[in-house]
Image (cartoon, rainbow, N blue to C red; front, side, top):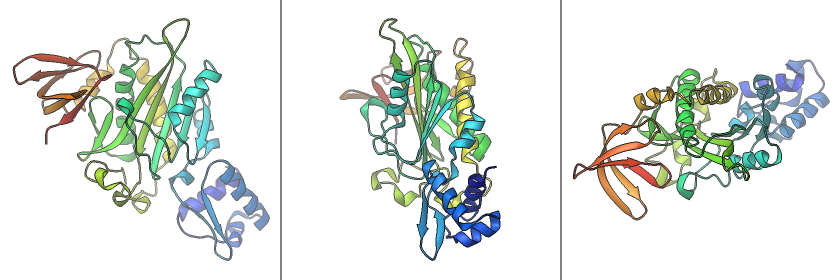
Amino acid sequence: MTSSQHLLHLLAQKQGTYQSGEELARALGISRAAVWKGIETLRDQGHTIEGVQNRGYRLLSLSTLLEKERLESMLGDHEIHLFDSLDSTNRYAKSLASEKPNCKALVVATHQSGGRGRLGRTFHSPRGGLYLSVLLPLTFSVQEAPLVTSIAAVAVARSIGQVCARTCSIKWVNDLYLDGKKVCGILTEGVLGVESGRVSALVVGIGINVSTPMHAFPLELQEVATSLYDGEQAIPADFDAHALVVSIVRGVEELVGQLPDRTFLAEYRERSLVLGKRVVVHQGKEHFPALAVAIDDDAHLVVEDEAGAIHVLSSAEISVRLES
């Protein structure tokens, strides 16, 4: 570890508590000037650190648990772009795809001011979350690209299970649920090659509520949203945000390799929150009740309406809600 990494570790051990420059210098065996320089280095890396005269320094949010150098060492084949706050990690990743063709990149923020979801909806992105976009410079047909959302859902569910020991289910097509409430949303966007007419790169946007306390959600979301941990004080001492991020990125890449044979869809179906359930299908201004009976090999949802007619639903224009 570098001295700044050691400093970050000490601050993280007592997150939210002030530690004096003298105390930190003594623990690290360096000067107070070196502590100040290390604090400035960490701030430049995107960490939020408060300094108060006669009290010391303290970490303020989950952003302090992420370090650019560590992510770079763990994902050496990716460009890493780490922010405390950003309007949209997907927007930033798409701009990278335009500027740097064939670039593999990861964009991470702990707050978004302009997060977006499916069908043009706003994606609430408060502090206490992890918002990441994986840029995959791979060529896909327009028909195959939507399957990557299903891949990402499986990869994130696996990673949360492995790193956080929490079991998530998947609500078709792009939401992960924990204990009956939404904990993660996914938005996959393609970058279309002008000459080829094929998708030349994909941006997989993933937003996870990690430690946003319930009271911090807007009232209209408190009944439907949740976090992995209810506030920073509930985060286990051994939680490693780097491990979660890296597991997701590697998981997405691994499962993309299974795209031709669709083997990942077996787990997608097993984790489904909607199969066998009564749902309400919304298409534009129209809606109808139905039974979710299957997910086909293109990740379309197959439903049977009350008249016994079968509908194969594409995620492009339709949303599905569980009947209350």
